[in-house]
Figure 1 (tube, rainbow, N blue to C red):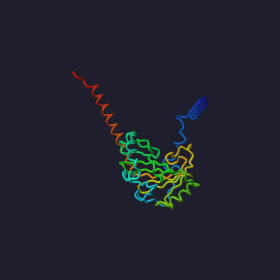
Figure 2 (figure 1 turned 90 degrees about the vertical axis):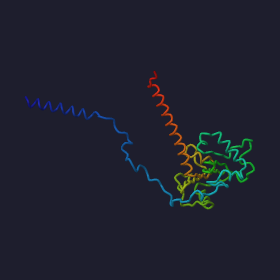
Figure 3 (figure 1 turned 180 degrees about the vertical axis):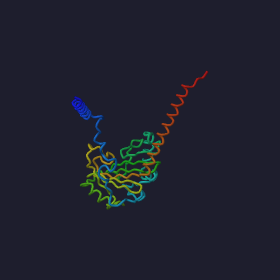
Figure 4 (figure 1 turned 180 degrees about the horizontal axis):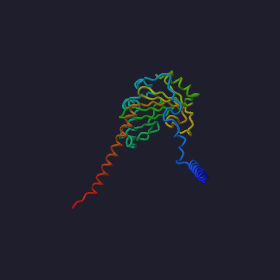
Length: 251
């Protein structure tokens, strides 16, 4: 009789254990949780030769060159200073950090075009960014140039500027990048689909060349981040003072 009771007990315990295993004790991990923490995805491709050019060796685009003073450009573009000051007032959110954008679409306060009577700029559209009145960004779009593809465009860029074939990295069929010592260069054949939402600043239906001063870009970000941190610290001090006031009795 004891043997039969023992067997029944073992059978009941076994069923209980099986029942416990059938119920998960925790929710399953998402798929991404099983991925390795590092070395995810293919390695980032690198150009054949690192570009060691500095911004003073960067190419000029229609007389515009990284590092130029505003006044130097204004000497042959007479409406530039007026448009610069106008945009400075219109966009204080960036101007307070020393950054002012000027475009070929902008007009002077008297209504005249920025590029009026400058025939060398008739076939291009451009955006220029100044940091502390130094030219730090150039985006030049060529309305009448129709390259077959980005490699065709690069070949001519390399032949006519200080840049070299070994510097470029092509990760997209329509765009090439080069990162040099203290500036970036981007070439687009203008055929990138806008639906990709990739690079609106370098692709608007026209082939373009973009140059950006990396140190100036970092300085702008630093100034903006420092200002945001300072504003948050002041707000925190204000909240602390208000809270202290609420907790302080004045007889």
